[in-house]
Length: 433
Image (tube, helix red, strand yellow):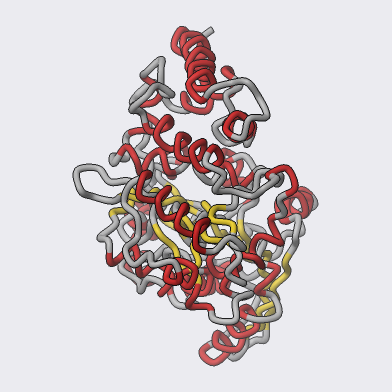
């Protein structure tokens, strides 16, 4: 980089403290009325929380109006808007946009070296762009289970389970004492909630190296004693012991949130993003709690920490400076993560009440470590070549079907089949074929 350019960049960083003030693209003079358009996937916040944010922000920025636009089919709608160069000023980066294309559409927010010290979810993200960061996680999700505290209390569960066996025992208590309550709800039909179990494999391993370093260097990641075997054995046992819905093929995601809120479901495996959605439907929001996956490594409980949608600034915005300033405020001061019941991106920020159990248990958060040199992307490559579907519901459905007797497969047969596919695919990826 040219030394003069570097000096200018550094002076902006030092003057602003964060990634604000260095953008020169703004057609507004100080005090001019401007409107910032923010694209978001949070349709449930548009007429509630986002209105509050706009009012709060205007107190210190009287010349700025915030306009939030939300879409149910956010990724598809926003991808179309990006293609047509009409994608607001600030937005959540859609999952459909290849990471490599971020510099084409978004402003750099600063260097990874600087920002990763302050925010979660940025380690290694700038590797592809010479250390630059183009999006900051709007919030962070942890893996675990939503549960109804009142249901647990009514059957005498006073201590959260720390092992799969303890969890099964607790679910059995619910079944025995409250027959009108479904102990565990799989959301089998919708499928995607079954995939919510996958991050728990990192929690069970207890080290951040599992996903990208350990798993990709073994031919049998589904064998007894491995994180995948342990995690999905609990899923199998819940179904096999009839602790789930009577007919998993008829489950309904939207209805499940209502049933959980009404105390008709004991627990569901979901990311922490779901907490606020379920609390919103409960007569007493405090009845809805969140606990880590029931497993400990040497007496320690872990939980996978993953980034939600990254929030970014449109590089074609006429108000880049103002957009960056708002982005900083949104991530650091809006209270968005707390309102979502998720982990704030800003390190050291106050955690939401819904994650109190994690604090009480001393849960340690893990984010997947980067791959070893020469093995970048191997996990995805092996998974796709093997057609295992680590992020698809298919093999979880096989597990449940086997557990309830709808197929003749055993749990071990399913795991052995996945091992075989993984081994074959891994050999191809390693050889570069």
